[in-house]
Image 1 (cartoon, helix red, strand yellow):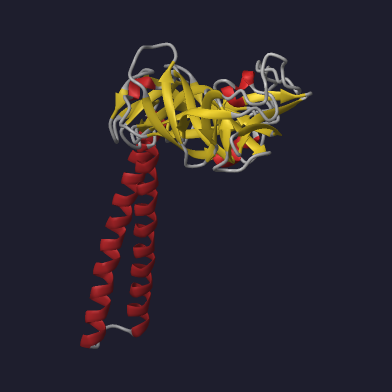
Image 2 (cartoon, one colour; image 1 turned 180 degrees about the horizontal axis):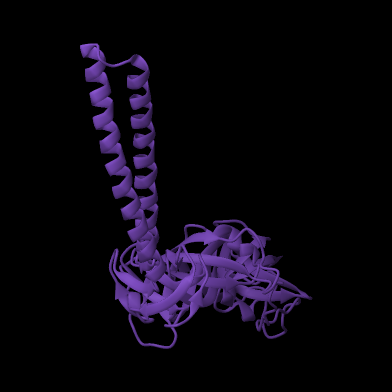
Length: 350
């Protein structure tokens, strides 16, 4: 909705009795220029890690140790927590014993196969004996492969009782405690990786958001005193969150921001182009009835020209209709105008 502004300059539609038509007044001349319209958008949000992950164990069990707390920095492959591993250790021992037995049987089968082959070559054995020995060796080889696979699974199950950090990160949340029974894939920790920070905003569904992708944004912390940061809009959610009625906006912080800023409240401000318009100063505005107007200088005289206001900035007004780029209007002194009054410039501002 277009904001309402009070135009303080009043227009006399007839020449005041105090002035004659030949009275020439010195006023400010302003050249109307065509400029891009910029609108300021301000959002509030918080700083989050660019990449975050929830970690959980691959198997269920009882937690025996929690080795890190919220806020701790961890390195790649660092242990974070352990489960009770008695059952897995027993399974590993059984798998090792089974593999040892399978390898012993394999060695015996190999020796028997060698003897059967040698006896057949010397003519004191039979092909049936050799084939039976080869069959037993093949079965023994298969048993060893299965035992090796079972041992690998048992070792993997034992290793999975220890949860490791996948990369250098910061622990942002701990969801488990010693003695707790945890299920497979149930989140145990939340980690923020150390490869960049983002400012995350929840914005109203403004039409201006269509133009902010890739725009620069100024970031100021709200609760703590620190230098202004800069960011770049990298993501705008295509859908409105049905719960909050807002649109998610993410800005990648340009510099290597301190990871300790995670969770910090931040205010973002950006300038968004919304088109272009002919610009005149506030002092040029007057009224013609209920409509906005400016005093247009033509042949050294002031003539009232109705205009349509497109937007406002701190010091100027953007017009979408009524005058064109390059035309001269009266700035300061417009309140002294009447139709046809002769004017001369004190200076021309461009």
